[in-house]
Length: 365
Image 1 (cartoon, rainbow, N blue to C red):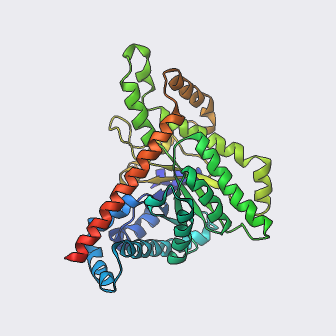
Image 2 (cartoon, rainbow, N blue to C red):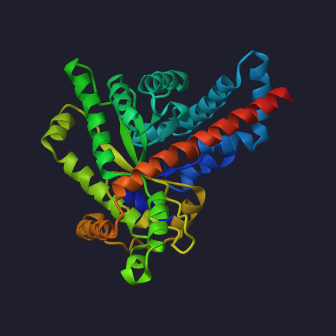
Image 3 (cartoon, rainbow, N blue to C red):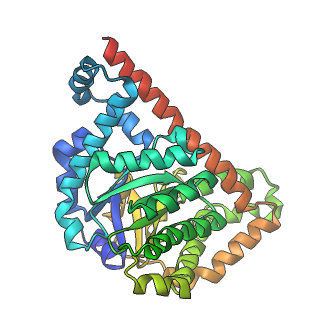
């Protein structure tokens, strides 16, 4: 898998955006050894599809129901057990990478995304329940989530911050993580074992922006911008990462043992079949990054014949120009991000509710 090795050696860790008992029983170990997989991310939609679509959970659902557990607690048992088993598969990689990779993410209940205190409580509960050092607790980057990020980091929890769409929110996420580390240092506590990734979403930006461009007059030249917004937005997020990492604040933190919060490119499967399947992979290879890929994107990336894109650092100016061109046509990516955050929360909440109903159906059968 030379292409995947090249991506990894260039500094982008490849994580699989999927987990199920079928994978745990077979392909995940193979993916780790053959596909350069260095971590796994999950979300409510992934677990909903995995549990609702498989008979491998049925006996456990019935058994747990017989002990008197309600559906939400049964789901917690099933998901934390899967994540714990995945963490164990990555344990060697976790140690050999110094805790940077070998990570598995589990997300707090999406219904809590607008509630700071309950997000913190569930994040701590998931950390205790899974009980593995290579766990990442996933927290949405809502306004309410920012304080939760700080306080979970302060409590020693490694956090994956998800549903980031805008540069302004990404800056706040970086600050929230730094605040948590600084609070620990004030108390004289170690920060060297805490890690974090910031999941910056990609393909959904193009889906929204392309639809707006398509509705414009062809004479405006808007169509030539299709398929450019998402990568430009992510490239500029990487610039922000580099700027913040070089700041005096982060120099002080790293001197005290802090680990950088790596950008994670999420939602990297293309939604428009007109685009090449690896658009959001080979365009975003850069040091100190993660790309979490669905299965189809991973396999397409394995077939790449080389990394032909210019280094991400050489594309800052043209990315600025893309965002300026969009702005001149009335498309503000900050406003787009607000819409996508609301939609993203719903896309996680709806399958989570559906999963609850599916588990209840098995309980009654």
